[in-house]
Image (tube, rainbow, N blue to C red; front, side):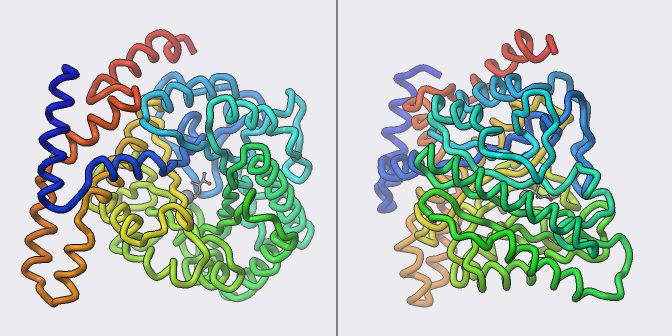
Length: 422
Ligand code: RNT
Ligand code: ZN
């Protein structure tokens, strides 16, 4: 697109938004200040680097597809992520799992990992101006093979995973300390029963105890925050999940932890956009795992659908974008170019936020309070055809990232030059 056309389109769009009482420049400025945490695991199908060679993800997580060119080493994953970040406007974060450690070729078990195994990532993040987020890995491990980790009936297994969580919090804190921005460390366990259990309480009691032990040490929230992630079911854990929505809402509320809302972790007609306002009343903050469930928790690439826009609107309207909300993506599609998958999902998340930031929220709230539901509906619908795309293009251009499909040309070139050689 010609630069003068971009500028003109933006000027016209700005005028349209001004008529509705919205300042497009201000929306862009806010958008610029919101980091998205890009999930490392889209780059290698949730494999990690604990052992050389391919690894099965297992534990209720399943990447499907065999598109060529996946990252096989830390260096390759970093290179791919750098490519993705160069096509996403703004400054963002990388979300790492514990199994992405650098162990120098010598296996280090999960209960023995240390900050030094992530120093390479911290240095890389620093030189790329990125923040880091973190996750203990409670899957793809012999001690998770029974389908139970923090809720296991065997105390020795529980203790192993508690130690893993404790170590991960230390690593997260070190990342946050060195990078000067708090690392959110998110706990998700795959635990559950395939078939109907008799005792629904025992595993939940054990989970409370394991989590309390994991979180026993206070860490300065300026460098580190804890989050806990609920789930409805997993592959092989269809009938019962101790870490359910009610469980973690109660846990996060009573222990003052962030609650992670993953778009794929609820009943098919439930949406997380409806939950944000309630959770913010009782939990100190929210971590979002923005995903796209297709019929089940399928973790498809995030598209600009109604629910994504509804999530973004709730985030913006909450007024807590900068203090209590942490936005991460969580999906893994191995059937398409993985760098493109990152870029498409992240750009869509940002587009949804921009659309939300361009909303005349005040005027609509006013109509609602006056019970003028006609005006409310009219305004909501009118906005759908306002020229937000011109604002988006201008934002990309200002940030020096490709406008429109030009980003895709770069991915194609990268595929030819780098990915196809793997
Ligand atoms: C699994 C959870 C969890 C994982 C990542 C890899 O259902 O969504 O967040 O996707 O930890
Ligand atoms: Zn998730």
